[in-house]
Amino acid sequence: MTSDIIDEEALVEQAKQDPEAFGKLYELYVDKIYSYIYYRVGNRHDAEDLTAKVFFRALNHIPTYKNKGSPFAAWLYRIAHNLVANWYRDHKRRQEVGLDGLALNGAKQETPQQVAERINGRDILLEAIQKLPQERQELLTLKFAEKMSNAEIGQVMGRSEGAIKSLYHRTLVALKELLSEHENLIIESDIDDNTAT
Image (cartoon, rainbow, N blue to C red):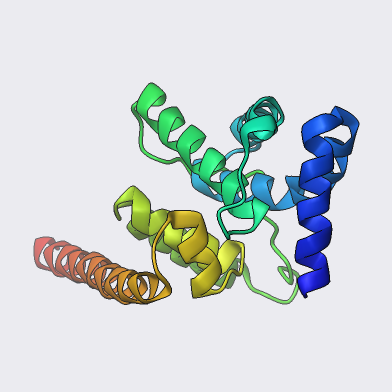
C-alpha cells in the first residue's frame, strides 16, 4: 500500500513539472470524481462540465499542491465539493435527480406494479435525502456511491474519523425521521380520501 502512495506522490511531483504527466492522474481519478459529482447534481451534462472544471483547476493549481498527509484524491474531492457548492449557489435550486442512468434491471421478471413501486420507493428516498443539509448529502454520496471508508470521508470532508461516524449516525436518524414523516403523510392522505367517499 505504501508503494501506491509513493507512486502517487512521485506522479504528483512529476505532474508539477510536466502537464502530460497530469494525464495519468486524470485517468486514475476522473471516473471517481465524475461519479461523486453526478450523485450530487443529478444530471450528466452538469456532472461532465463540473468534472472538467475540477481537473482544469487541479492542473492550474498543481504547482502549488502540498501533500498534507492526505491522498491526492482528497484534494480533488475538495475541489469538486467547492465547485458543486458554487453550482448550487449559482443555480439557487434544489438538487434534481436525473433519470439519465435509470436502468430497470430485471424489469422483465417484475410486474408493472412492482416496477412502479420500486421506482416510487427510490424517488421517496432521494426526495428525503435532498431535504438533508448539503454536508449530509455529501456524506451519503461518499459513503454509498463512492464506497469510501469513514477515514477516507474524513480526509475529503476535513474531519476526523470519529466526527464522520457521529455525523453518519445523526444523518441516518434524520433520514429515518424524514421517511417516517412521508409515511405519515401518505396514511393521512389515505384516511382523508376514504372519509371523502
